[in-house]
Image 1 (cartoon, rainbow, N blue to C red):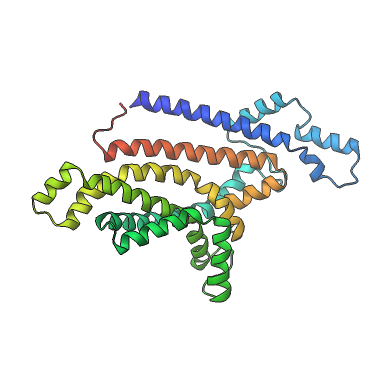
Image 2 (cartoon, rainbow, N blue to C red):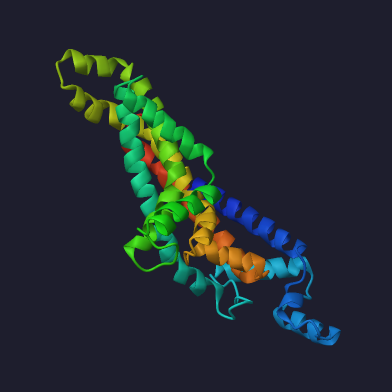
Length: 305
C-alpha cells in the first residue's frame, strides 16, 4: 500500500507542477496587470516602479521559480485587487462553494441513483422513460440557460425563492438545482446501465432462485455491485464541481470560489488566479485518489497492493 500511495503522490505532484506551469504562462500572456491597477495618466516611471515592487520586471523563469518556492510553503502572495493574502481569501470563500457543491451532489446522487435503479428494475416502463428523459434533458440543457430560467419562474413569477445572494436555505435551492441537474443525469444514466448489466449475472439469478424478494435482490446484490462505475464518475464529477460552480455562482451572485475566480481573472489578479487554479487542481487530484481507494473497499477483487 505504501508503494502504491507513494507512486500516486508522485503522479499528483507532477500534475500539480504541470498545472502551475500552464496557468503561470497563460496569465503572463494576457498582458501587464500593473496597467490596470494604476490610473490612466500614470507615467512610465510610475509603472516601472510598481512593476519592480511586485517583481514583474524579473525574467519569467525567475518569477516562476519564486512562485513555486512560495507555493510550496502555502504562500501565493497578496491579491492585487484586495491587497490581502490570497490563501485566506480562498479559505474565506471556500465554505460557500462546499455548501453549494455538497447540496447539488447530494440531491442529484440520491435522486439519480433511485431513478436509475427503478428504471433498471422496470425497463420500458413509464418510470424508465421518465428517467431517460430527465437524463437527456439534464445533459442537454446548459447551466447558463437553466439558471436564469429557474430565476424567472420560481423567483420572479412565483416568488418562492430569492433571485440570488447567500445566507438562508432559500438562497441555496435554485443554485443547487441548477448545479445538480447535470449530475442527476449522469448518475441516473450510469446507474441504470450498470444495474441492467448486473441483473444478467449469475449471482443475481441464483438469489432470485432462492426465493429472495425482488426489493432485497435489488438493494443487497444489484445496487452494491452497480456502485463502482457510479463512484468512478462521481469522483470525477466532484472535482469538476468547481468548474460548474463558476457559472452557477456568477448567475446567482453566490460568494464562493467560482465567483472569486471570475473576478480575479477579469482583474488580472495574478496571485489570486494562480492560487485558485492550483487549489482546484489539488482538490481534483485528492478526490481522484480517494475514489481509487474506495474501489478496494467496494470490490474485494480489486487490489492495488
